[in-house]
Length: 352
Ligand SMILES: [Zn+2]
Image (cartoon, rainbow, N blue to C red; front, top):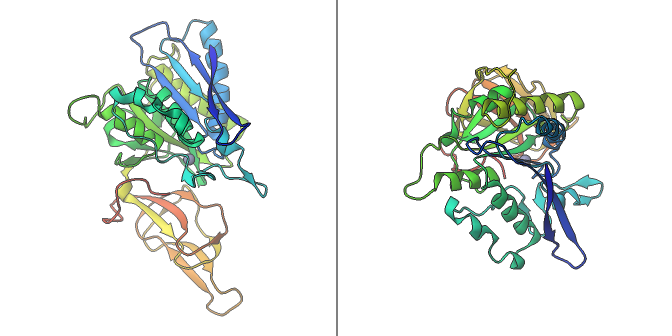
């Protein structure tokens, strides 16, 4: 294993960020290569815990000669967000300096333009530099996994349908309970990787066999436990074994049995008015259209001061917000439905 660092100069004097990168050289040049990063949203740590245990296993595998493909791991991708503590809470999603989401505004380049990502780096902000250097590193691999988490959530993933159903093996080994098929139309890290893979010269490719770009949502922000992280590390190891990146004679493939639904089928349940949230249903529940999901106390203490929030469609509750006060229009839940819930959804991500 080789440990190096991506070094990012700060936007003010005296500051420098260091991002550790771990590389294992494969002994089989025909085996696929993989890049895995976690905590690009700095306050999403299930992936960091997973990769800590996976790296432990990979070091053992290396000593045993069991690494066939090149493996690059960045277990904590965003030291800028990690340091943004304000009034006791980490702001890991948005860069305070530029007010941009750390997982948006990645440059969309063709694979052949990979090195243009590093042009004029010195004139760019620290957050932009970080994004470009992570993307540049990732585009050196065939398979790219970006590990995130939701608020309260089942295990699920966003994947451009250009990589589906080939990626069902990862959904299976990580015991995902749902897969959201995205349209590849945003500037999130995973979609910038997907963009490069689909633009390899000539026309845009509709499918890209042997490549992968995926955002894995490793349950909720608080789902950071030793047993869970070890189990997920075993799941990722099984994926690597199945793809021939590591050798594991004990590996057995199993099919993915969960739902895979397009983003148009995701019902975003919103708070129609501000209020205190009383949830009646939780993640993993199957619901029918009209089922009571939550009661909002909009005028506390007054007769008739509550408002019922009901499901618009049949489906599986995949995520739920952890806050117990909602502003008008705040997202309360995501429900994976069997049918399209909105015909007016703009292409791109479900959330800012
Ligand atoms: Zn995230």
